[in-house]
Length: 612
Image 1 (tube, rainbow, N blue to C red):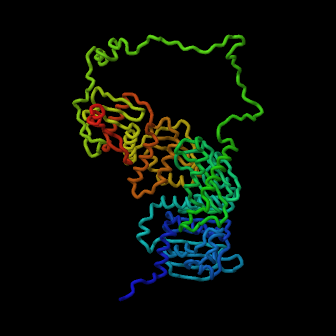
Image 2: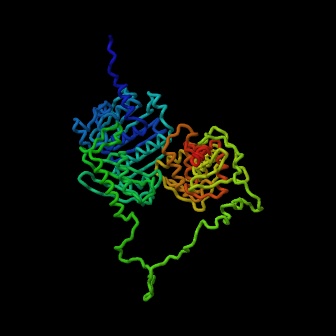
Image 3: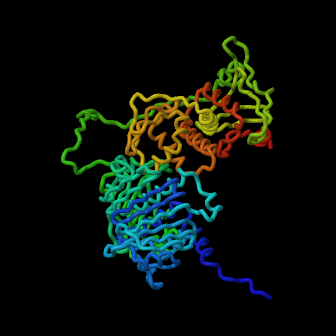
């Protein structure tokens, strides 16, 4: 019988490995920037076209490579970083496995120009899908110049699943910022489609944060610096007033490497307990220095997940460090009793000298009976009819909805037709705990979640404006300046037409600054800047395959921001208008994200509680 197991060709094995290392254009940018840092570069330039689909070019002034090293660098598991398994637990560099370049050449057309400082000529090497196309001496500057063209050209299935140009470039900006933040002593330049996006000069970490995210965030940062036997922490956390519901910039770095760690993020937020509203987040930029032997950076191909030896002890150190910094910089409100001058508090002579002092006495009517003479009270007893008399003296029917039939189940199913029952002259609606609107119907008691109902109504309004390109702008008396990070600016540019359709009037001031001149109508009482940022961050959080999906996301985000809050008291007219508007939409039963809006409690369930 013939053997069926065989070794895969190197080209196929490299393509499989590329599926883990090269997930999208941003993965290529990350790997090449980290290689440049390992080569000692002080200036790194990233040039991208079409979101990285057609070109990714990374130029550095690092040490460069010899002709032999340049050729070996593209072989799988070829590395200068480790020589034994023990070296994995003493890593101080970014790359070490030797998989990145081999994975990249397996799925793209690659050209490398490189030269060492002592060499007169450099080396040019060209690959196409793991196949060596050329290797020759060439005149070039010191350092390395990688050109990655037509990513996934030989794997159409992978290329088909790439997102839009704006989405892919936004991912590139995210990776670029992660590398640039922790390497403040290196100069970085990012260009997309011949347009300069970020130009970061060398400086301190605070300056780097300012250059990327703007002046506003740096004015709200508090320095953190703690040293212990297990962990050294330096960096910044946001003051409590910097808290926001979404879009907070949160970064952890370990030994110069970016990482994600939800457990440590909870430790940071623990320090803000009772200082910020629940559900909000604060920005932080924290750099950890740990003994490499106490961590494992090799548990994930992208090296963004790191395992620590004693996470519980580190959790306590992080929480204590942040709490101490908040206290040291007086982030928590309090009275300064050590101040040289105390505030002038006027004296109040509550007890004049010599005045008699006695305990307070409570007076009450001992023979009062709240149930006595109830028959004569027009609010109950035999005179109940007086309660239902109108201005003409006629008795009003207390149950005008007895003849109205609502063909729904509990809860209402969206596919069933709901008649406009609220068009009656008298609508006995009531509000319960500022959350629900109660309406008696023939089949029982209808409960309408008022905030969700308003979200559904607003969603239909905004989705219509987006599709018809008819937003109503309400001009601001004093335009507001909005400073956006590079990633936020890219996201805004990608949805500029949709933002305009919603009713925003925005003009660019250059350098990541924008003037907010107008906002959508009916948004009084909301912060225009926060409203715009919320829309931008909603667009950044999700990738969109078609424009309709983008419309739905933006319309829902806008509706949630503008809708009435839970606990808001409504007048009878407001309740009537809201319910009327709700039952005019095509899907009144649920919100766009599937939450129940309307529920009917059947009479049978109510009667069962009283007549068992």
